[in-house]
Length: 114
Length: 114
Image 1: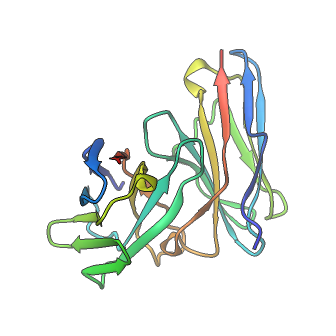
Image 2 (image 1 turned 90 degrees about the vertical axis):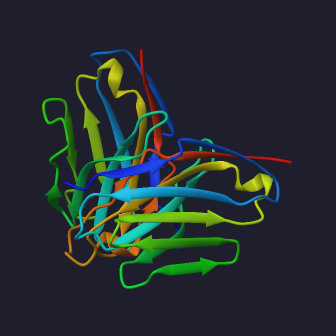
């Protein structure tokens, strides 16, 4: 089955800096890669996703890049703010098969200091 | 639109006791998932339903865990008997179709087995 590795496990940045979280996946058939943000004690919430026919996607301060050849994808957060502090999870699935499921990475705890 | 509803929010039980969790997905979402999230880890799929049928339960410890979605709407997940290592947050998620449109998670049930 699919295996998703995520790094780093913890990331501390100063407010205004950029943050980058990287994930690799094992199944070359995976074609859908969402990112979830989970604040302490709350449910994971989808913040951005990318499909394999696209190399990059941006939404305000958040961007995701995908390298299908290398089987890795990354989350980029620019101009970080304290409210960006949370655990971020990457995931992968073989979307389109009808019954695919998301396999998650172990998460990255992002700490943004004022 | 109403979100994914889960209850209870918290549960503390002794080992060897039984416990049940309930989930009501977003209206119209045919696919329902139960995930187990151990502290410090990413969500791990336990079972996936498509309407009232099981699609994937390969990671469900069937000697102690069971789940049903009899009418294709709400679902229950049961653990009997519970072990200490079952302490985790149990997340229910739903999606309209295949996973490549992302999930909506419920708030989860935090289970502590003592």
